[in-house]
Image 1 (cartoon, rainbow, N blue to C red):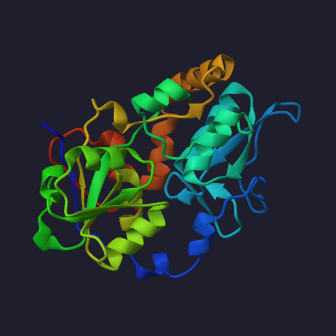
Image 2: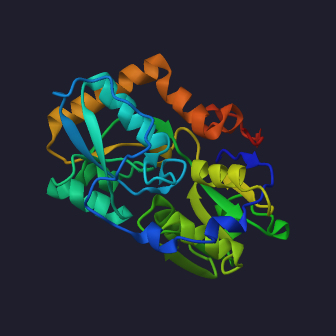
Length: 290
């Protein structure tokens, strides 16, 4: 039986969609300028630097502040791994699909941006061990829909992000009225708020973060994956044959898990009560955290 966690109805501000749609589509091969970044590496100048592909459009995992600096759960995680394993990181903003392509071609060393485990990814790329519990979830705005699981989406208009695990899950489910995909989380949220779709499918932390920071219109968020589901585990993506880097990243993940570093990072961005790693009961209410 699928685990379900219900989040308190919360609201997203229309201001989320007010400007900068083009910036969510931007793709540049230049590293992001870090004018005001408060992060200071403790590593020596001689430490190697890894080129990290990330979207910069998926809060709370990877997004940009007002100065263009990358921030979020995954940004903090890869920096912490670098400090632990002796490498610095340089971020490159890529579209979702380009992240995979640039890692495969070797122009980027790794990609990190809310990437979930999939068997086909494991066959094609070098994946790290899991470092974050990232279950899929449904968000809807009309209470009368009363959606509690994937089966309740039958006959509805739904949407998910192109190339995501939620697309596969929706296609396997079938029986929906209309299914569409979008290239960014921003466009998914916009469609839901404008009533173009009945529900959207995305990662629980992304939906939680949006609801927590934009509490004005009521939405309901229903996760539908448990800890035992491989696709609910988040991984770092590298080239298939890059054994040395894969081992280094896995070693760092093991150490940081033992130190509680990932939980510390999660709490920083999601709050203690909204931490998906802590969600283990079959029914839980998640309160907004500061």
